[in-house]
Image 1 (cartoon, helix red, strand yellow):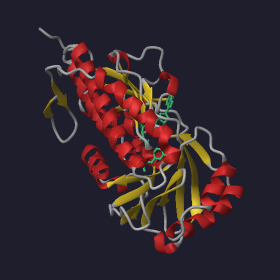
Image 2 (cartoon, protein in one colour):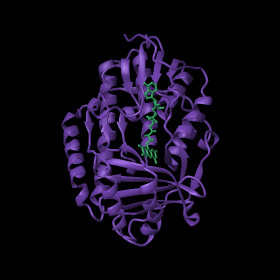
Image 3 (cartoon, protein in one colour):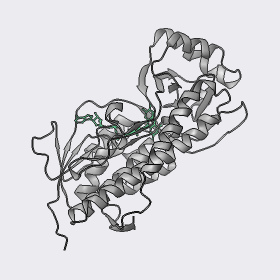
Image 4 (cartoon, helix red, strand yellow):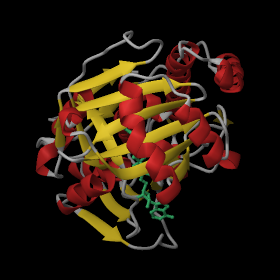
Length: 359
Ligand SMILES: Cc1cc2nc3c(=O)[nH]c(=O)nc-3n(C[C@H](O)[C@H](O)[C@H](O)COP(=O)(O)OP(=O)(O)OC[C@H]3O[C@@H](n4cnc5c(N)ncnc54)[C@H](O)[C@@H]3O)c2cc1C
């Protein structure tokens, strides 16, 4: 017969995933220590309505009560042609670091500490953001994103984000206030070559695109962007309850999906369910196997989604290497996935009362 185990846990990392894990576990009666480094990287993100709803469900209040937000009435995607693929989605833009700071002030029953303790207790959630590629099971490509955090914005576009693709790049224009936007520009290269990029931008298709590009071209010379690797990553496997990954540490999405934070919240709900099952004496092999399968599944679904996007760019040649690497990554996952799922019922706590879900 299974036996309950102690419910003490250390959560590493106080981004949206680590904070949400700490909250759900504390609400569920766990004794939680959260290791929060003081440095949080500012990053403008767009939260789609689904992620907004998930935050409100888990945290009990709308996201706007934790952080200043800017409402976007449209997200326009001109992808495979000037007039094609226009999708309109309600979204919010906000700063992910400010969101995390706002969530942290609302935590209760969690001990917040600055350094990893020598004794991390029986269980640990690792939510320290994306693992280095060499520590990941799979990194599907080498693409890079350049980010200009605060460029001037045409007032008429202040409620409209846009995703646009040109020759060898795609870009996301994200208004963050009535007169500023963050510009994110993805290229297939591991290292960004600014002069090559400037040449590509100058030869980008006209129309709406060139109106957006004018300030960006000026900024290329004066404001070097931040760089970040954006290829999807499947993090280290959840090999033991001593280090269960969650958030970007478990699966990190290409920003093209606009669903990185949503995936982080889903992975936290899964990890918390798994920890409850482990603490109740469930089979570690079955529970961790189930979590690994679910992370594999999230990663492969994301790759399929990315392949659709990158495969439909109007000038796709530059992305052929990335498309190849994503196909390779997909073929690595499928044979590993077990066909027989472990028989398991997972117990989620802290999300408006207990929920039992079939795994
Ligand atoms: C360019 C870009 C654009 C994106 N745009 C969007 C978007 O529009 N919409 C969206 O939903 N998602 C977007 N995402 C994804 C989103 O930002 C992430 O999915 C989300 O922030 C992941 O949250 P997390 O808590 O897992 O990790 P993080 O937010 O990375 O948090 C990890 C935390 O752990 C801390 N930490 C690291 N090491 C240690 C340590 N040793 N000890 C203690 N603490 C540590 C870090 O300081 C950080 O605070 C984007 C990502 C990128 C790169």
